[in-house]
Image (cartoon, rainbow, N blue to C red; front, side, top):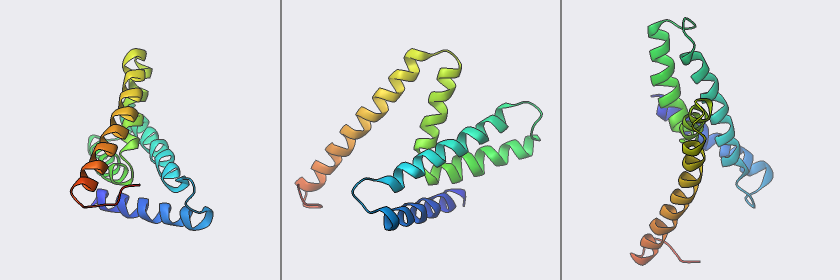
Length: 126
């Protein structure tokens, strides 16, 4: 249910922003990623601090809001929180590696997937 709510929110916010500013730059998705990262960071702080939430409250926040809503809204939020935790723990090498590898490998994978789709007649090549 949380994933469905997050996905609908992503679709709505992206369409709203795109309708207002156009499609020349993906402002809608950028905003989704920034908002999702802000929200999961805040929720992460709530769940990591001892005594702020009951065990049931912590489970709800982690499963429904963080994994469900934020995960449906943007997977970039999970990447952001994991990288932030690496930085917090002083694991700079892993944090920078995660940033570089995530961006480069995901772009590469998207490109390969696109090319495979074109090869098999799914889309048009540009």
